[in-house]
Amino acid sequence: MRGLPVELYQLGRRVVRPRDAAGLYHNPRAEFRRLAEAGALRQLAHGYYLVPPQEALGDPRWRPPVEELALGIAVADHGEQAALMGLAAARHHGAVPRAHATAWVAVSVNRRPVDAGRYGRMVFVARDLASLDLVRARTEIADGHVTSVEQTIVDLARRPAWAGGADTAGEAIARLWPRADQRLLEELAAAQRGRAAIERVRAAQSELGA
Image (cartoon, rainbow, N blue to C red):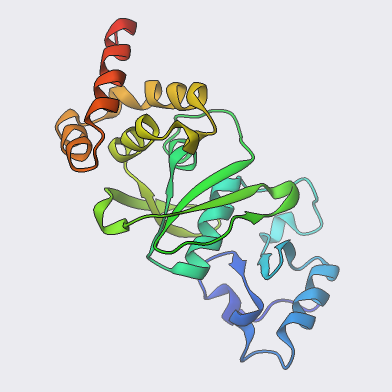
């Protein structure tokens, strides 16, 4: 099996698109389909392919977390103007032990979700990334940004739907709360119209003894 061009590895992410190989193949789409059939690539969705690590070639059990794939797709399309958020951010911060099938990503434009079949679903939310508190995220699939612990708490308190529902959002917040810088949390809540939501969370955490 012919390997992938070194230029694709030099992109620094494992999510690749035919357009990334425009100068490498005469017909990148056809070549990517051939590489997927040969097992060198895995098709995630229309126009997106995953480069598996060497040890996972031919192993159908290897499947990276949906939030890592979401970051890979977002970085491929939007570069620095993308960040894991909501449930995906909570997962990245280790506050959600169970795997989920949907990941939320903040981007600077409106765009449709990406359904990657058995790999999961990526939901993109148009947000002003400059107003968010972000930290670097390093994953096996791509490096990019993720909302900070404090920003994630504010987001989930204001919009539980970004975790798939109130129960999951509440569980994630409870695990993140002890790690939060309370001053930064207050600043973000004040700037993002989240004071009432954070006060409700604070009251709930006090009742639980957190």
